[in-house]
Length: 128
Image 1 (spheres, helix red, strand yellow):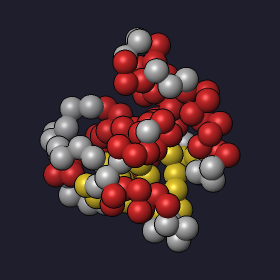
Image 2 (cartoon, rainbow, N blue to C red):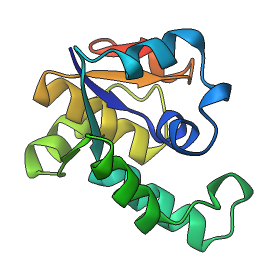
Image 3 (tube, one colour):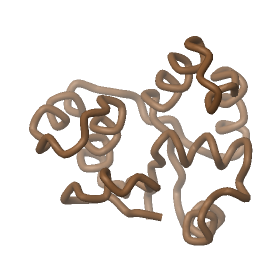
Image 4 (cartoon, helix red, strand yellow):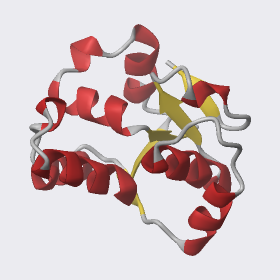
């Protein structure tokens, strides 16, 4: 299965995997799954890191390098993703999360999230 993670799961996987749910850890560790991160994940981490947010003390450059070294594939943001995000119902206001949902849909991936609001979107979103 092709998996894309929301930023919260991505950061937890990098700095404190013990805080991930059992289901999330199992999916991320399953060698049959193809793990991807979005350029939008790194962008969100960079913005929140620069703002000094306590839960985003992780340097985005270090996160990026660690993801690549651990076999994650980078998913760029393309125009089709933006167009798909514009058609989503207004369930969630976070533009990064809306973009991740659109990317998963366009690319045939499943978005892993721990956000119950995100899981209300139709389509390829799995609450873990």
